[in-house]
Length: 447
Image 1 (cartoon, one colour):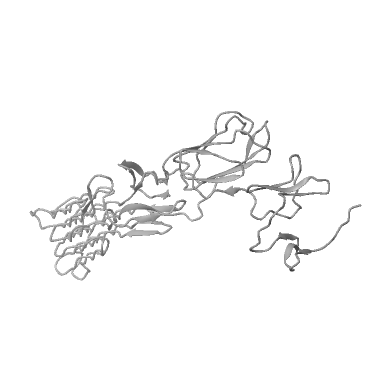
Image 2 (tube, one colour):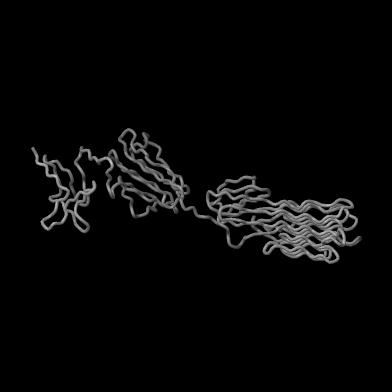
């Protein structure tokens, strides 16, 4: 009968630990030691190899053995050996037991699996730069089955994909035990340019001034905003100020409403245009209303409405035109709007409305970009501003004024970043390598 010696620690003649067991952890040697096996193997009492070493390879057990790990125990530092060199080439010959980071930023890659394998062999692959959706990875199964089939070769084409395969034997061959995309835990924003135009104000009715244009807010050609993947950006397109007045009724014009874009990291608001003043009674306030651009003032002592800094300009005085995005209103003309090429062609928007003038005189002109003319006396209702220009309408007399033009929101981004997920049916167009979303009505974009 073999003898059994029960100890927690085996030490050398100098009192140094050679083998130590503590709290179910067995340690061979200590920090800084070299653990040598001589003459290259540890055998049991029957001469069977338990541990052997050849070159730099240490083998547990012998062919045909079952190597068991006790329940709750684990190998520290074992498992897949991830390679430190990033794979960037067009081909890779995979080796069992290894894990590979594959970067397909510049090209696709074909991975060839081993021509022979043993049950339990494991190989892993991970999308290093999250580009497998652009340049795919193809697995050449190299004569062994993959999930029970000998063809075709699998393709990995999902961004952030991680594949772990284990060899199960000749019948089913390689079987994935993990084949899922890994979510980007630190999403990065991508650049987008914008134009946000609010609804224009309407002119007054009754010896009245022009309405101010909607605020004109843009970064086109400047610093872009950042859109975060997975975030939804809500777009509100402001309406134009309502038409006012009827024969014999004198009213101040209505303000346009704001246009906005809001979502993670983004908060943009273009201010609605100010309504134009009306000469209702000498005791009434004859000032134009403030807004993105200000509404015009009436005689004799009114002041033009104030425009918002970086969005518009002030309304004019003494039967003044409404302010525009590019210039202040004057007597009696509306200020011009601003041209912008965010869609790929130059379009002018956010012009102020012209003012009413005395009988027989030419009416004040609306500013370029949707501003409409004022009215002579007597007159029908002045024309409404075209939709999605943010223009102000002209001041009317007995006929009243038309409605201000509604606003517009435009987003421009690289086509490679565009998700294709929208609501509200924006118009989608392209210009070179960019995609442009034009919202003529409220909606949303999910990055």
